[in-house]
Length: 291
Image (cartoon, rainbow, N blue to C red; front, side, top):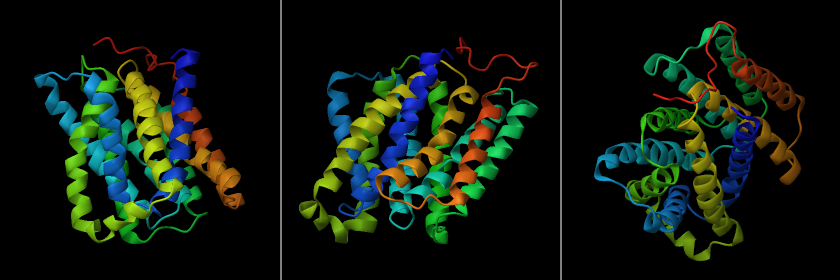
């Protein structure tokens, strides 16, 4: 990838890292799945009126609405109610090695020993980081793993969607995700819907930031990169999210800068560096996919 596209990927990671902290503050005022409903409703309202989708594209976008909207964000927001933002950011990054392995198995993208070593080192970094904050209860932990898997599968689906603009995917998948998440919220949270009427600045800022910053801007750029470069060239950048989330937590909300967090973050950065390093015997994974 050219330097400017690498910087775009890093900018997206910064947006997503800050989003974890914003969401953690917001779901204290609005139930998590209902928060997801409001987030995707706003994103759809801003994008769908100006973006058209063809009938043959609906099936793929529906899949994205389920794996991305319901499995990834709906389940993630629910898990955040019982887990720390830093811990969640660490566990959710299991989606990156899952996506890389799936790309090798499903899309036949080359892995190589160097990238495999990087994956193992990065997972080790995740495990070290997870020792720092309080681990979530078993149910929340399982939900985070499900969310990570949903994100990994979404990356593969996006890679295979041809001839559709990233903003179209984002807008219409958001619209299709709304009824799914609304049903989940009605089943699990309807007794707390009254909280919306008393939500304050944190709750509504979370809705706006998640919809505009994380969804429209962040995922719009991410989908654009995925359609131009291999999964193994783009997805590893997301493994920097825990490091940045920990740093934002220390700076913005006074999290404890424990040695475990620092060591885990450094191990993860080393792993990402190995993943992004191109082995000599493999083709350059950052070349655009012309298939």
